[in-house]
Amino acid sequence: MSNKKHHARTRAQESSNAIERMYITMRHLFNRGFYKPMGVSGETLREALLLLRPEIYGSIADDKAELEGLLYVIDRLPQGIEECTFINLTSDEGYGNSHFKAIIPPKRRRNCYRIDDEQMNIEITRGRSEIYDILTHLTFMFIESHKISKRVLIDETGNTTRDWVKLEKAVLSKNKLSQNDREIAITHTANILGRTFNELSQVYNQFSTKEQPERLLHIVYWLGKLAIEEIVNNNKRTVTFSPVLRERLGHHIHGEIWADNIKSILLKNKLIDRPIHVISANMHSVMNTLFATNPLKSIIAKKGVFGAYEDLSKKENEALRNKVTKEALQNGMIYIPDTSGTNIDVQIFDINKTVITKLDLEIDNSKLKKEQPVILVMDYAFGEQAYETIDELLKPVKVDGKHISLNVSSISIMGKAGILEGGKGDIMIPSAHIFEGTADNYPFENELSKTDLEGNGVNVFEGAMITVLGTSLQNKDILKFFFNSTWNVIGLEMEGAHYQKAIQAASKIRKTISPNVKVRYAYYASDNPLETGSTLASGGLGTSGVKPTYLITRKILQQIFNN
Image (cartoon, rainbow, N blue to C red):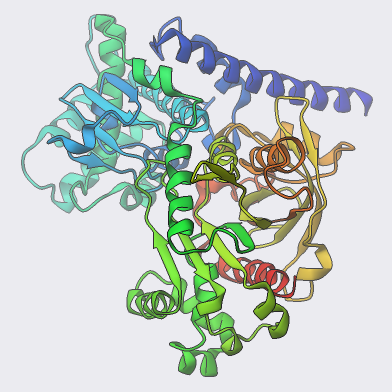
């Protein structure tokens, strides 16, 4: 028994060290300015990732290829990256005004530019967390690419297996593949990847795009081809960090532009002195809660309010969403699309102009008339970016030579997180955020409690949450350690400690906002990484996220309105 316990602990310690090593190595490589992921300089990152074996990357440490992990990564990197020997991380350096067309990965909003056959530029405007995210994904992708080359190279001179020759022919063929050709190509590819024909056929369509129906074959071929180049001709892939990115990082350049723009709009609309309630959430739930009742009357009568929310979240119902947006814009919503590069859009709701009486929430109207709150909804930040944006937002604004502090009454954070007990769609209410890889922890008084959200057919958990360096670095051993230890951790996310750091600095140290600012944190579970098969790589939430999202949103609004 004690031996087993000891083994589990050392595995958690090993993993924890591996994350710390990755973190330090990534910062070191960034300062150095370039590295070769499959060379000596990338060795620490590769070894640490293989030692970690994060849940999201499945069978990274096996000989066979990891398909779900590859799909997860490919969705978050620009199309065509598998063909590039040179990957250049840059700041916003003006490519937007050039002839280069922005390539935006489907699952991560970032601008990428294909400079030529060999080079891809990826624009970093969201701080260090984005760099860790990309480097981790690239390391995974390159490890997978070398697995392919190991299986297809017969000798050092570059002779390859018949499977490889056939795959190359299928990929380079100018003709559209027939079902027959495709199945022949999948047969050879399955052999190269150490997977079954069936496994490949099942994920094939998930990789396909309209422009590239045979994208899986294409990705496997190019990943293998560049790995063969590295082994046979020592032509190694290189990741570089532009000088401007290295100089700008950590200086809140984008966060400052973003916050200044918001403050100028608050000033222009004479909202700067009113009580401001900041909500970090998605761009639909607050708007829908405030404005769906009127335009969707008939749907609500038929399906109830949560049924209407579910309809709004379905991809095909764009017309419904437009109805609600129109209603919102006519009733005091100001929409601020991002132009700063933070990728964080903002909505401002002047509650004076909103017909609150139509809402199905219990609200004290006399209080509301007296308070006249303004609600500022900002889209999700990404990791460390949460500190940069909130830190800048809470700084005073200069008007006619005088500094005016914003009258921030509350800050509410609602987001997705991984859960350690329970499953997709459950709700977590944190009592503290623990920052992974450091000794920092942030206890706080959460205005939301378990009893606020219980009894709606959704499980609610309360306890500490861990803010991680990147979701793609977590493995079971670390999570089990946190779950079973006296830390009483209920879930993991990427922004909590960063928000906390900014709020506590503004309210308790700089005193630029009231020390009594109310804070609310609630997360709904996107996955349970302790149960294999329900990690983020196993797919999205579908409509199971609708109910928890709106339960949290409605509770936050109710508390704001009843203050």
